Length: 225
Ligand SMILES: [Zn+2]
Image 1 (cartoon, helix red, strand yellow):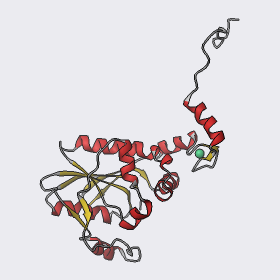
Image 2 (tube, protein in one colour):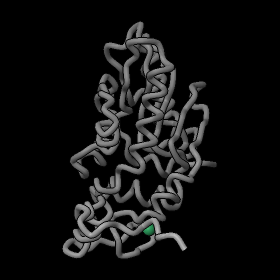
Image 3 (cartoon, rainbow, N blue to C red):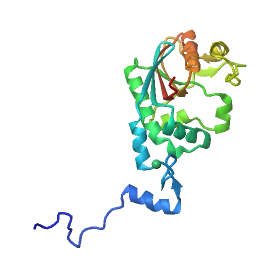
Image 4 (cartoon, protein in one colour):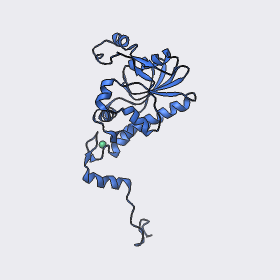
């Protein structure tokens, strides 16, 4: 029998703390449960990290523009995004931000040089309540600077649309956004969730009306029909 390969001489350096071990010890003092499965571990346990990574990305067409969504808006992804948005759980941002950031970087790499990266403005009510913008948070982690040349048109309201039918919703949305300084520029649009696509389509319209061209939209998640 040969000596087991794990045997070490007694005078080796003490084992270095792995990141996992440090987090496990911190967890004793700052106990958190996994946001999805509830396991007493950390913000998102390894098994649930893997589940996020296994969720496929989505591609759809909005106003004739290819729209890359990092994830479908359902289950685990929906819960994580809501925790970030509504409860400011920035510790849950990385698993979503990683893929979203990669899609944004790819969109910019494939777009003409000097393309603008523009945020579809969030509803003012939601933004006020949160005090931060999850999309900007995600992009900061990916080091992609995001512009704000898209603004809500004066007097435009985004609330009260849930009761409207699809046609009325489109009609009520047209003209709610305005783009400035995009004439002759190519644009990549970013948003958190694309649902019906009405808001994103309005952003595409606003850029076109101001003389720009939207070459790609990228969202964190997409609600599938
Ligand atoms: Zn878990």
